[in-house]
Amino acid sequence: MIITIDGPAAAGKGTVSKVLAERYKLAYFDTGMIYRAVGLEMVLSGFDLSNEARALEIANHMTFEKIMALSTHKDFRSDIGGQAASKVSAITSVRQALLKMQQDFALNPVFADGTKANGVIYDGRDTGTVICPNADIKFFITASMEVRAMRRYKEFAAKGIDTTYQKVLDDMISRDKRDQERQSAPMKPAEDTIILDTSDMDADAEIKAVLHIVEQKIKSAE
Ligand code: C5P
Image (cartoon, rainbow, N blue to C red; front, side, top):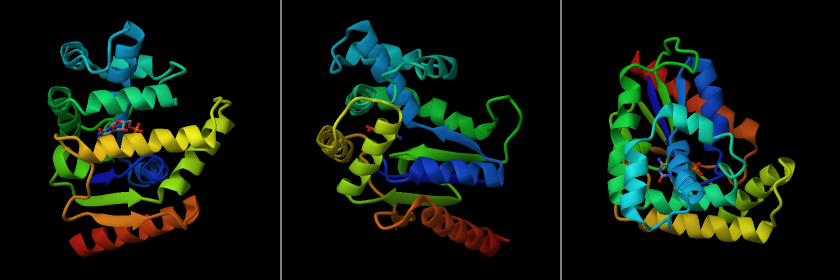
């Protein structure tokens, strides 16, 4: 089974992806991590984020091992990592270089320990539209900008990351704009996706709603 979950930052994609992965024994592929890895490597190497040749070179040599190593860096999840990811992900050649790695994962999905999974849950911006257009179930999870910024601000505060609500909100506005307006694979719901607005939902309500839809889909496919 392949499930795709797309949508903007802090809409609730990660929360629900992890629950679905656990329940249906699916390998969880957080595709944003690849762009964060490329973006952070650019920052750490001192390259300008608009330098396409350098970004493409890094993307061409990106591996799962490198992503895991970079993910322990303090800025991987910070707004520095987020902005860097957003900038390199707007470069068409970089997206193309990272396409096969994402698509190939569904051919032989495995968990981190190498054991076989029943399928994949993709989390990203273009996984239902570009990476896996033939997915069994597609979601586009969203929420209002203010709700998403407050959620992300609280996550940062809990991790001790020094920032303000306004900074998080500004970062989100610019990332959403770049993600929606880029030429290659702009963030948008796939035609056959299920759109879920979680603005008025807590995590439990969101999980309940998604599980209900997935169970219905599985039953109707039997
Ligand atoms: O999901 P996350 O916030 O980790 O993603 C970081 C950035 O990577 C996003 O703001 C977006 O610009 C980019 N991204 C993308 N396509 C994906 C996943 C992430 O362009 N499938």
